[in-house]
Length: 286
Ligand SMILES: Nc1ncnc2c1ncn2[C@@H]1O[C@H](COP(=O)(O)OP(=O)(O)OC[C@H]2O[C@@H]([n+]3cccc(C(=O)O)c3)[C@H](O)[C@@H]2O)[C@@H](O)[C@H]1O
Ligand SMILES: Nc1ncnc2c1ncn2[C@@H]1O[C@H](COP(=O)(O)OP(=O)(O)OP(=O)(O)O)[C@@H](O)[C@H]1O
Ligand SMILES: [Mg+2]
Image (cartoon, rainbow, N blue to C red):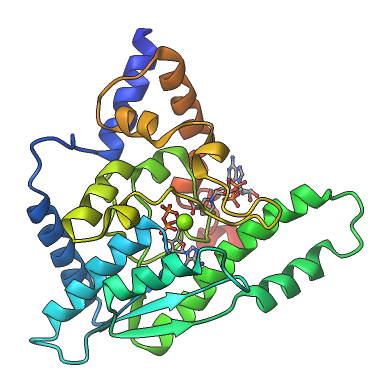
């Protein structure tokens, strides 16, 4: 590996800060993340955690941590609670997995919002009569609209319930920029940060989830033309390759080069919006 690639990869890993899976106290990891949720909600002066539950392992783990945090907070703050939100786009193919996740989490409250009417109305208003946009491209972008409408619904629920919106981004998604900007990437707090995908699965098992739940193949499930499409098919990397990179387990030069390129290409998603500098000094307006 060239020195330059090695240095760049090292800088990315330092920035993301994933620890190896081995020799880790997973019970402590759960306690640390539950404490983070409790402290953040207390210091924000809020009482409710809000999170969409899809049936995937990320929201299964984050949701369970939220319910544990709500239960712990209730001793001092009886109004503390977790609202689990089902946000299907019409009928969800793996609804049974979502129901199993809810049963496992056993949240204080479940709310269900069908995002289909909102997504379809917005999408139709934008793409109507635009013959230059292919069906495939329109379907892909409607997927991002789904993620942003889910975000909007969760923010409204949080605002109406003195809550904060929880996100499920972990480091395998962060390093690849595999989330919708201002969609599922938008939230108030991130209890899974610092973890690789296999570590999220490990936490699921540690929390008592079945092997089926902990090992469920990851899918963003955003495209209507390709339902349940595996993340790994879209990314062009397996999560094992991404996780090995994150956990300092190496990988081929070619894989590392591609991951670094993917990280750099998606850097704009991990930053504040680009802003003009020094634009609004009072002198400028005179
Ligand atoms: N260099 C740059 N500097 C500043 N902003 C830049 C930019 N390049 C694009 N942008 C902006 O970013 C937009 C593109 O980003 P974005 O809207 O996110 O869209 P994009 O990255 O094209 O698509 C999102 C990807 O994330 C996947 N995803 C989404 C949601 C959940 C999950 C999951 O795992 O569950 C996965 C989804 O399957 C898809 O592959 C552009 O339209 C533009 O507005
Ligand atoms: N149908 C849905 N209902 C409720 N929330 C959803 C739905 N789809 C996505 N979300 C929210 O968007 C987040 C991002 O989706 P993502 O697919 O990355 O995570 P996941 O489904 O929990 O796990 P996995 O990545 O393994 O599929 C979810 O964790 C969840 O909070
Ligand atoms: Mg998913």
